[in-house]
Image (cartoon, rainbow, N blue to C red; front, side, top):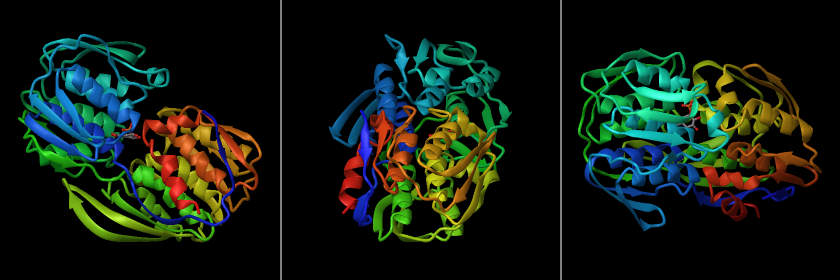
Length: 425
Ligand code: S3P
């Protein structure tokens, strides 16, 4: 599907509720499938990626039913059964990497497959530590499909060179079903939703700085309510900050400090954002955000903040085109290993729109403020976050733009356009 975006004259106005967090939805359906008894998940994401995790849990014999369009009932005896078919993860790296951790220690074999993009993403990062635990995973060049021959695993003490929540979660999930203690140390803190949910479900898990340790545990079934996704909120935050006259409220946004790097950076850039109604739901902090159009200034984004805003970097690049001065993004080389090479993708497409932006090996440099022109076609690279970032850029372009393969937004955010329509007056 192609999407035409027209310049918006009047600003974004009004309030919307941000739909469910993708990362937390994956974890909720996987962990509830491993808990003995009945769990309820409220506000489960309708994104294709979390639904891939749900379908795989069903293929592994778990009784999962929709109570309504966002609420699930999950009944499990705590065990998975032999799948009758390959387990298809679609576009979802989180599904493949987390499920590899769950499946490596089972007493049956299984195969994880994915779409073209996922089949080109690196899996060595999980195959290596899982193999140290005794896992037997066969693949070609460490890429999907992954053939997992179930083995009895043993605990390890693993120091990761990569700050990746998917890798950390894969090892912790394997450790949850393994005798002995499994410890994972990361170089800087990545999102900790797995740790928080495991602890909420009474697993034997402790975190000490950058080290998390887990030992074999029976999970307690729970009712889990999923907060809104700050990575989805990011597109509205960005649009409201750069489209003149905007003033919006985003309700129910997850504010876990391992995900709020974008808010930290925007504060430095001079953004007018207020946090309201803070509370905790199911062990995760949430709140509402009030955002007003702001004159932004540039900043440097590097080091330990990168994992806290990794998925927001493409839309931050769009914001930086409107900020006064030179914005430098460094230490983000793993952005090249996402659903697309997001450094190349966003730099190429923003350049076509008239931005003054250059690619570096581990990030990009953006000179602003720069008027975006449009009047051309841009490519989403079949990557949901590139498609949504370009939509925001399109709101600023003086002529309309056409985004190729726009419907990839459904991977994380099927409600994206409808919600934008309610705010664009
Ligand atoms: C995710 C972790 C991040 C992020 C991805 C979701 C997760 O990936 O980019 O969209 O849910 O654990 P990495 O762990 O590869 O950094």
